[in-house]
Image 1: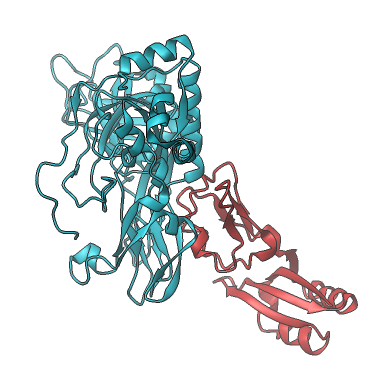
Image 2 (image 1 turned 90 degrees about the vertical axis):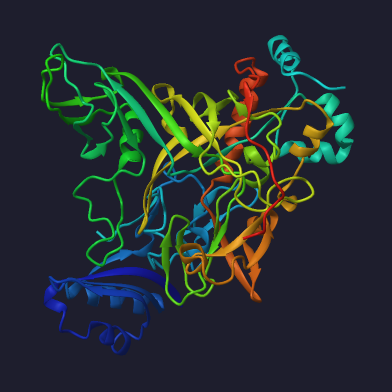
Length: 136
Length: 396
């Protein structure tokens, strides 16, 4: 079993289709939706964790691409801009997964992309705007 | 035996000065005791890097051939309004000033405050030019009525950073007891004690290492965002009459410093604009204050550690804004705050800080190397800061 955190961008044409349902029922993937949104132009975006064996993941990805859904790895979503960060630690208690953390010896703040679920809690709380979200 | 600042400066000159940071000195004093340490150590350096809204810059603009009176007129820099109620060529740009078009907290939306006075100051320190727009009413001696041009430091005679208040000696720990998130100058506070915000370098903080203002006074030379600055006066809201611990450090916000320095000489690494969602714009500056170890008492003062310093926990959803409800929920040490969580109402509340300890350390280290290398000398204050004058008040 493998787990992949992905950002799925849905074109407006798919907005009526139960695509996540097909991923689960037809491709046997376990889908854990971490975040979902749809904008006024019917462009949808889902941040999800997909769990399955290599074949299931590959077939699921092929299905999504055939529907015009773009797949990007989640790690590209939150960027911690180290040269802007002053390691003040104001973001640390607001990060629910501990992805933004401080080394209490060096007092340097770092971002662990593997732990990040892109909840965006950090984006507006960094006074130096050193944490940014990138969906596209 | 007591030392004088003059004797310490002679040691700096001859390269024999012994300097430690306020963090390093804690262990030295633990091992050697205050008496021996005070004989061996000459200077202890402190440091802080933190947002302070009470910041701004006085600018004197070079006149063009045809002169213009800005005083009583209207001036913006990159769309941010500067105060023009001064002489013909002087303006003051405050860190928190916002462009006219900024939505602020209007339209039921929390403002993002992406650009304001502090960002203009940061742009200038980064060597960028900003757009000046000025409107005057014209006089016989200053006939010009309109000026619009890109300007940088070259177009200014002076650019002087002046912070009416900085280096707060201790500060509140902010929490939120209500049921909804609030956005404050202490950042976002999640409901029902979701997090706690504090803002002090604790054991490295300047005034916590000279709690009774014995060596820091008007005229004290300091490191200010990459250059030498000075204590100009006691800071606004300076209040020495708060309850103190046995080590004489205050148990709440108390002393403050007004700081002044040449903005043209400052380093962008040490001066940063900040944006607080839902609150506004502010400016972070780096301050490093040297503390001369004149005697054993000063040695004892600078040897305080985070475990010896306490701050009050305040509810920013009710008590801070309205003065109603329980004044202080608890008193916590900086050691507890720095552990990552404090105990409140039987709950582990995660902590975050707005004052960068990593940068504070860097400032104190940098000042230490300047002094050790003979590039920074200590000044004798020309007048002390106001000290405690009355009986300590209640802890409110």
